[in-house]
Length: 210
Image (tube, rainbow, N blue to C red):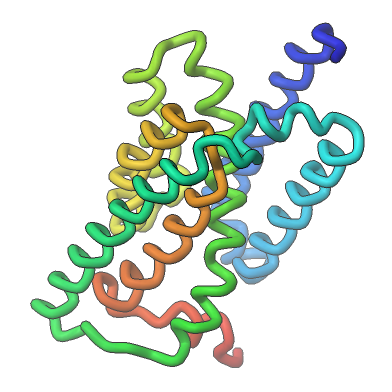
């Protein structure tokens, strides 16, 4: 393993993650393209980098959290976050009259974790992993939660929700260093958040004609 590559790669990863966040925050979809196009491009770009790591620098994958160690503990902790988050969303939905079940939840349950996994990889596997040795665990949790919330601006609901999710998931990642369950809980919690708290059907919005 060439240690001389670590600072350069770390700087590249952080810069690329920051650029991704900036592009996602800017309302480019209002002017240039639908949001789904942006998401597909971002996912494909980072999956391409993942393929590069698999082929050229597989040792980095485990360091980021692509590993079996800590999976069981991380799954259990993430399951608790998922259950609590879903119950909170259900309670809010019941109070607002938006607690419904839609067939559109099915494709979203399959697709959202992919987008959630990319976000968790960037925020946890790249940002949190790189800054934690420098600033410590507690500041890393706060910084990560703030970054996670900020990239969902200007939608207040998503900013608050992802900030809280960042506070919950970052300690889990830093404790067990396993990314696999994080993308699932991220993606699946987005569904009750949209349907029950916001009262929106994102699948209908994306598939609606012009």
